[in-house]
Image 1 (spheres, rainbow, N blue to C red):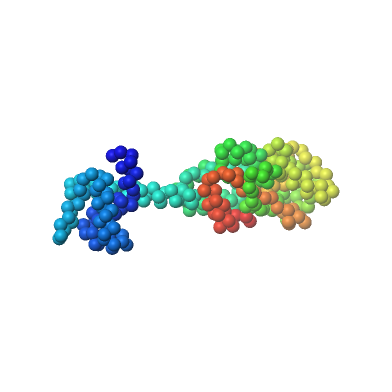
Image 2 (cartoon, rainbow, N blue to C red):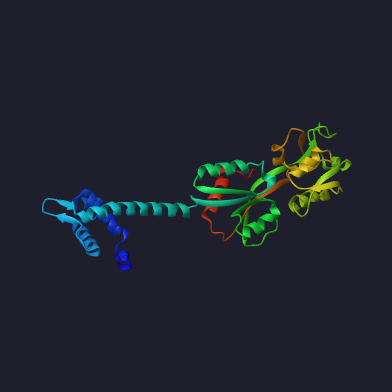
Length: 303
């Protein structure tokens, strides 16, 4: 069959042919197709002209397939089924129900409700291949730009205007202490009480968000802490456990390790919360991203 013949042999003609072949009656086939019989007969004649051979033997009392029609019917049924499947899959892909989604996630959010939201999304979208990549927030912007990840769950940073962001999770801060620390038996800890001890802080090159947040807390209280060592999450908790000093951390870290550490509220600072944002390029073009955003909103992962 030439290319020109393929152009004229459209999917509609095959559907009409298959319906007549199933019914072996032009009147019943026309009724199934919600059309009158004369146009249906004309279309079948058109199909036979394209193929170049008769497909039906018609008498006043019966309709049956010719040998060529039987071969055509067998193949046409597969083609129409494949076409319908193709259309369904294309529409599902456009809705973000299939395909793949690469998600960057900061280690500091590993114990947050976002993890259960990710699990729920995976269960609800089994045909979307999830690729979870743990990386520091400072590495997320280049990962988005190079399409290593489609979406990032990260701590807030200054990002260019072509990256859209929204807050998807907020959590209070806690003071992480060894279980045998002098402050560990209290119900909460004031910032001023931490001045008596060396603290574990955050590295600027890896955790600028938390470094700025903690420095801001002390600065607004007109206090100057002593930072013994700077680190990154989750290594920071290892230093606390080793007795280097307390650290101010997001609540979700307390869900990761609690065996030898205590996580106490900051007294007088109930409104101070660490945020996780969802970031994606405005022109990223992956329909699964919108479905993922909707899943996070549905699960109420913000708090």
